[in-house]
Image (cartoon, rainbow, N blue to C red; front, side):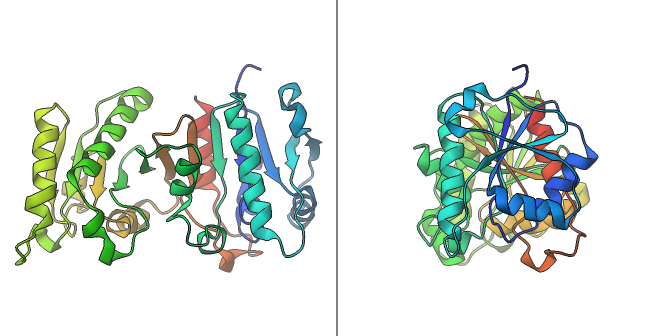
Length: 313
């Protein structure tokens, strides 16, 4: 097979995924075959609802190496959805994807949006942590990537009261190194990285000041090792146009410090890439968005960007 297939887990059955997936495959042609892991019953129902006229190429998971893509067809691995067993169904679709990735048939993986509070059941902070744990990878980074500006939270999905306890120099250094290596290998240049402080204006009246005790020393160490890192910068001004245009990536100390402004600036024109895994894992930069189901107004741009990113690898 000339291009390795892209494995796509549909994720939450009650989400906008099928709408954006159908819009994506209608609007673009991709070099890599797409293999969708979902319930064929749900897929047929969604195709009828959105009036999608395509054939289904049902793939035998046990004979995945014999897979042959068919033109104008949707390649599907069926995972039955038993009534009342939605979370088991989602878990099984991920497990099937992981088995394929472990088989080395491909190294390209996309997951559709998942209701994290139901699926993860407080066992993991997020899907990034769930996947990295399954593959026994401790050093990972969540990169929300856009060719003009990307962001990365140093801590992910943590309640704010726990951020300062989790923060340390080692964690900051790990994220910077992962991002630097990714940009050099995959994008083709050494990135300029801006790092925010934790406290408002990088100031605190407390003796234990994370900005001076943790963040500044980490930046100094990284600079001495040749990384293009700058900061710490106040979180309330780093995203101003004249500031953000100087950098390729902005790293924040907690999730919403960088994701909220990023989504405001780029909306759906970004993808979530997990760095540090033994394969490419990408997902659209949005959730299930249940309020938008059946309205047929959701944009597929983030999913298209995710597929295009893997299509070129």
